[in-house]
Image (tube, rainbow, N blue to C red; front, side, top):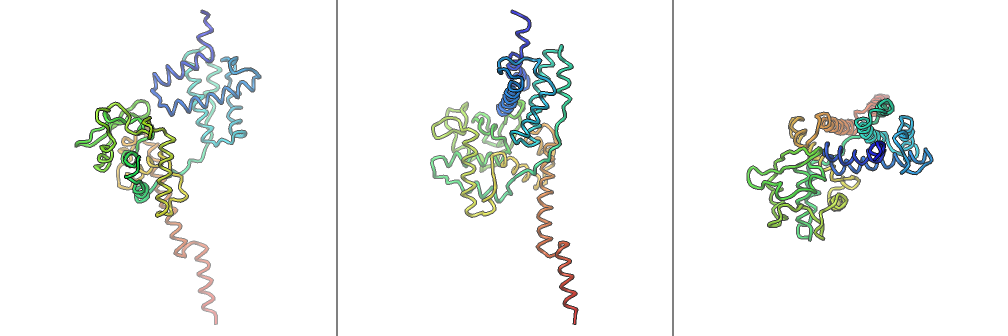
Length: 333
């Protein structure tokens, strides 16, 4: 077998996903999909630019200028935001780092790609539900419907634990301790485990859907008995948000995803006075900087509410000038 075969672009692509991402990093299915989509787009762009088939691409084709052209392309032609551009760049960088570990003869070529900087992007304010809004969504579930118990257990679990949807959908009975101390063992990103306490209400809801002798089966399943999907969970959550909006009009224009329930848990903990480092461990964040976003979000929301109150009270700059003019008019003979 020739030496060049193991060092081909697609052999190294396969080892990147199987040996590095899955074997070494223990990346989640969500991360694998994101990296797969990013590299697929990059390879398709590269093949079009080089006027060759994707199967004919080589390591020599992966150059810094083509990566920069790809990033410009996804912004200009695909209307991707700066945040999405940076995510695509992160995937390409991770892949190129793998190439560098396996193919040091092209270190100069790869180092120029790794030197490409991310683009400054405006961080969006985190969306979350206030506690009364989250309760309204959970209360909208009809427990007497065929999937009512499952949906009630799922939404309670998401709000209680702040779990990622992938963590919740992989939950099994053997991961739970339903007697005191009531808790759940979650397997997060990078195969990192964490323990979260459970409310009595969550425990009661989970007990109703646990099937005897099925400790290794996932708890949240579809009507056909197959594991509930991310899309399925998002669909049922939207359904209950629409139902809750009939009594809580503020929910009508809200885009509530399963991840919003995670944000809602984090902000509720913050509002309850829980230290940010504890919230970090509770949510399974790698860095406290990620958790600190919720502090910024909470302060921004409070500032907006205060400014709205200020204007409503007639104390905004324009309102003060108007009041002054009215007062001056009132003093004229």
